[in-house]
Length: 286
Image (tube, rainbow, N blue to C red; front, side, top):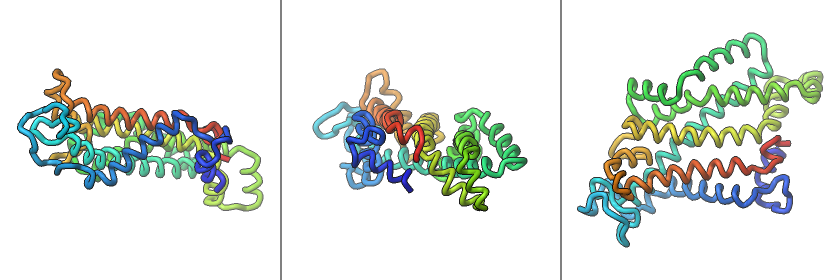
């Protein structure tokens, strides 16, 4: 439990340099929380319905009425970006949670059990990990069809092997330590070893890896949507908003610029946050 409480002490104890976030890390967290809030409450924050044509000036400029301009059909871009956050952030969070949860659990089990179970599972996932992520996503979505469950499961399948490999490498190192030997001599069960001994000691690096995988998932999801295989109309995530209004790119239309800025701000803020995790949390959770 101490490893979990150390995350909260990073904000409550600014004088403790081992656990405190610096200014860049705090700024990254603020932006992340902002987009998560938008994803939850975007429906109520949007000034117009996402599909309503509110202006006949297609790819219109920023005005006092339309703060982020209008898209290629004259729809309010602010409303569409606010509602698009629900899909970009929501799908990415669901996929990274599933991918990392499965990968971490399987990685710790493989490290503790070892033997043929570890060898077979590792070789299977290594082979799967060799498939290019965007290519795999294109094949699955094009073959099965695009829907939110399909996107979540596809992104989970793409990034779970990497999470497994990372967690297993950490767990193997912990598994060789003296306190693990003592726990085995006491007769502790495998679930006890995983939950009480290994997991608290790999929590910090695993959280940092989870943040990186969230960034990768956002970018792959945006790429799929840009190619027309992501979230389907009338709904749209940020990648789909860029694709819809790509004709305005040469004119610097706000309808292309602002969804791109939204994607960049989310991914950069996650990188800012995980790159500036307190040393005590990043290196090892005690």
